[in-house]
Image (cartoon, rainbow, N blue to C red; front, side):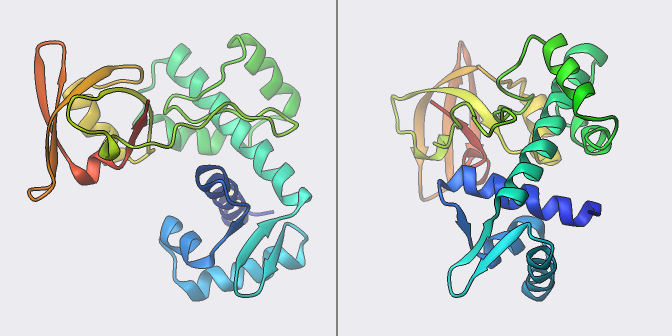
Length: 215
């Protein structure tokens, strides 16, 4: 299996977790990966011929057990490496993804499990994504974005999208996982929210608010 095939399998798995839907539409895969519909269709046919996915006409694509097992193995390794790189080597959350992409292919499952134990079995990665167990069990995924919180609500940041520009912005603002804010203004017409942490106030666009998840 090449890197591109692995990226597709991981994307399908992550979309299924985030949407609570095992069947993922091809155009959602295309939008997530930034590929054309034609490219996605060709890859789905290839993955189907290898037994990793099942294509259901007019509905979408479903990971087979073989595909799900491979996705879990890759995502588990990736997120464990992210935790290690941030906690032990001082990588920032905006730079850790690229290194973890390389390291998830390094070593074998025994290395990942030793690393996982060394890190005291973390439930989440640096960006707040849950680390699946080998049998597919997974901690709750925080899916409610800041955009859906209203004036007066308290919001605790638990997960962010792994987008470098977003993470750079959050670093500039000093935001991190488990920070708590209060929504003090919401302007739908102008497309922003004003939030407060301790004595500091911040303006967050709706676009960014939809990339921040918590409770």
